[in-house]
Length: 142
Image (cartoon, rainbow, N blue to C red; front, side, top):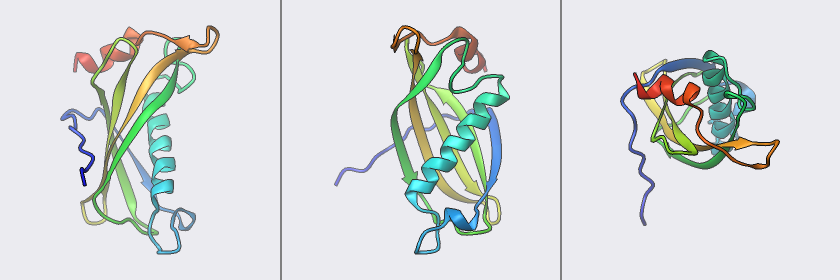
């Protein structure tokens, strides 16, 4: 069976830490795949906020998640502190990929590698729009 591969970027420009809550764990007492998607979403919102943006307003454009790839490397349990390192790359006319490297800070173990493909969207016109230079310039020049 073919496995998903993610070619990670080298330059992560933001990091944030999230603690694993008891409500983040499943019947097997570890963080489930569905909860990791929620944690990735929280980290992405923090990433955008760090640059003065939101998912609804990046230079008057919103984002839509067009795809997601996740490689699970190790388990995470209640009480773990997870460091999310985030950056952007693979820019196109209409979007880019946001990359995530998640590490357990207790033992410096890699937990997840992930990427979300995003497309910029104009909800007033109800159509895909161009990648804002105010966003792409933050990463293309670093």
